[in-house]
Image (cartoon, rainbow, N blue to C red):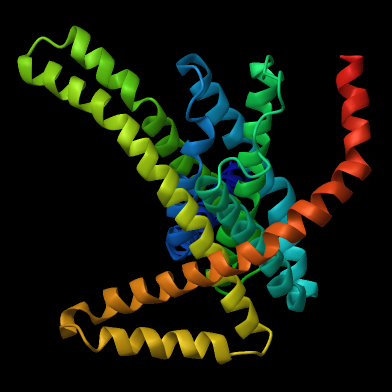
Length: 328
C-alpha cells in the first residue's frame, strides 16, 4: 500500500511539473506571438488576394492548402533551422532574413509595376488561353506559400528573439505553439474574409428580419471593394515588411546609419503633432519610409529577377516541370 501511495505521489509531482511547463510554454508563446503582431497582420492582409477570383467552392480548399503549407513552413523548415542558427550561427540570421526581405520588396514592386503598365511584357500570348483552372489554382497556392515562407520566417524570428533564455526543448515547444496559434489566427481570419460574400448572400436570402436581409445585401456589395482594399494593403504590407527587414538587418550587421536617419526623421515628424500622438505618428512615419525604400529596392530588383534569376531558374528547373507535366 505504501508503495502505491508513493507511486501516486510521484505521478502527482510529475503532473504538476508538466502542468507548470505547459503554463510556461503557453505564457511565453503568447508573449512571443504578440511581439510578431505586425508581421501577423501583414500575413493576414497578403493572403486573400491569392484566393480572389476563383470559384466560391474552391476558396476554402485553397485557404486550407495555403494554411497547411504555412504550418509546414513554420514547423518543418523554420523551427529547426531557427533553433540551429540561434544556437550555432546567429550571425547568419540577418543576411538570410534580408534575402527574404528583398524578395518581398521585389514581389510588391512588381505588382505595382504591372498595375501601372499592365501590357508590359505580360500580355497573354495570342491564341493562348488558360484551360486548366486546377493548374492556375496550384500556381496561386504555391505563390502564396512562397510569400508566407518569408513572412513566417519574420514571425518566427521575432518570436524566437522574444523568448527568454531557456532550455532547447522549452524554446522549441514555445516556438511550435507560436507557429500553430499564429497560423490558426491568420488563416481562420483569411477563411472568414473570403467567405464573407457567401455569408452575406445567405443572410440576404434567408434572413427573417428586414435588417438582417439588408445587412446581407450590404456585405455582398461591400466585399468587392474590401477585396481591392486588401489587395492594396497586402502589397503595401509586403513592401513595408520587406523594407523594414532590410533596414533592421543592416543595423544588426553593424551599419546603423539608415536606421538612425529613419528614426530621427520619424521623431522630427512626430514632434510637429500633439504630444499624445507622438508614438503613433512616429510609427506611421517609420513604416512609410520603410515602405518607400521597399518600393525603390523592389524596382531595382525587378530587372535582376526577370532578366537574370527567372530565366536561370527556368533553365535549371523548367525542363523537369515540363517533363513531369507531359507524363501526367
